Amino acid sequence: EALKGASNRDALSTQNESLQAEVNALRANESAFKELETALEKSLADVEQAVSEKEQALTEKELLVAEKQRAETRCQTLEERVHELENVANDRDSKVSNMNKAEAALQQEVMDLKTQIQVLMEERDGLRDKEEQLWRTNADLFLNLESLQESYVLLSDRCNEKQDQVMELQEEIDNIRRQHDDASMQGLCHSPALIP
Image (cartoon, rainbow, N blue to C red):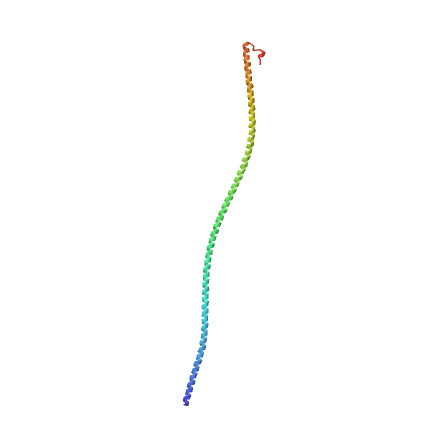
């Protein structure tokens, strides 16, 4: 029985040692499991952070892409607006150039008209001087005409008087001739009373 008891003690001791070894192994495995769990949690946290950062990066990229598209659209719109403004500016420059040419032509025309007006004014002044001269000449001629008319009247009157005198003298001559003829017929040609 003593041997049996010793054998049982040895078996229990061996079993106890085996159990202790298993407990120690479990404890070691538990520590390793905890370390592994900690490492897994850290790895999971790192993965989640990486995923979050990637999602954030993707979101930022999408935002940047959208912003880039908006910027490109805005840039295209501005380029089209610039092109329109350039066309408007070119049209205005063309219109301004045409207006400048038209203004220059009008100024030249105005200068030509001023020159023509100056010439016409000089001609008008010359004609006015000639008109005044003609008026003076006409006045002189009118005075001369009046004088000539008066002279004509006087001459007509004198002519009439002379004609009357001539007629009277002619009558006297006729009378004298008749008397002379009568005296000749009577032989009185040398009579002093009959001598004119």
